[in-house]
Image (cartoon, rainbow, N blue to C red):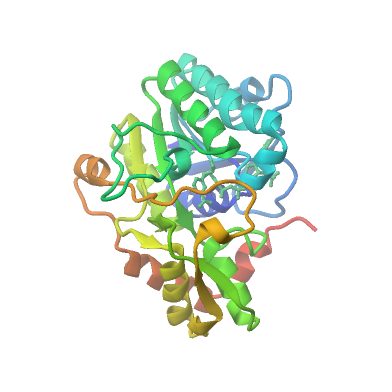
Length: 306
Ligand SMILES: NC(=O)c1ccc[n+]([C@@H]2O[C@H](COP(=O)([O-])OP(=O)(O)OC[C@H]3O[C@@H](n4cnc5c(N)ncnc54)[C@H](OP(=O)(O)O)[C@@H]3O)[C@@H](O)[C@H]2O)c1
């Protein structure tokens, strides 16, 4: 399949492109961040006039996986207009263009569309979102626009970790970098999420496309845990000092944007429709550590333009 990946310098887009190129014809969209990557790249700002139409005409993809976003929660709070253009209006335009051109679309949304007030259990795709901040609100508007305009699209609500171009994009890297330098960090005990290794996420998104799925899916890890527990798991696997992680409530943190407490998302619909279980957290963590041992973090950082 010829697949166009937007946000090809991002945590998801870059890992996805690097993996998918072994089995697919990959074209990444990059503003000006990447250098010497082993896949085809179209240089473009997705918000430039006519950019979507130009890119689709040039790349002629059979499918688009739209990973580009304004994904920094605090940046969204400080520039709500940009957040809306990037996270809501652009997905709408892309979904409409893909439908007209008979191109399959996978749009990436977030677990953070929920307010996290659910006391017990997990959110399903039929639960009603209630976004708390600008990032969540604009991402919610984006996913709803995509579902409305393009009934063939897949909308995937995700949460993932992995090695990034900057070396500091993911929560896992935050723990490794700080603990590795002997620094104390806080770990939130009251933020529950379902982390999935980015490589597993990419592989599942491709499987969803190949299986012809459409509509809304929760594409997260099958195991829920607190951010504190995640830090401890990382510390243990990497032989770092878990005592440097202080258990803390997110409500006592200095973070600008409000964070949801319970982002345990059910993956029942996904595993049923894919006909298989999702990879266990321990499997992902093992692979993440193997990548570290094999020098993958340095490799991925070498694709950054200097
Ligand atoms: N990370 C997570 O755990 C997480 C959790 C839930 C949902 N998500 C969602 O997953 C998706 C991918 O997230 P991520 O963590 O991979 O994001 P990321 O690392 O912040 O990457 C964002 C990407 O979007 C690109 N981009 C931003 N504005 C652009 C523009 N105007 N034109 C072209 N490209 C532009 C960036 O390019 P530049 O390099 O040029 O800035 C970058 O490649 C997003 O939809 C996000 O909302 C992420």
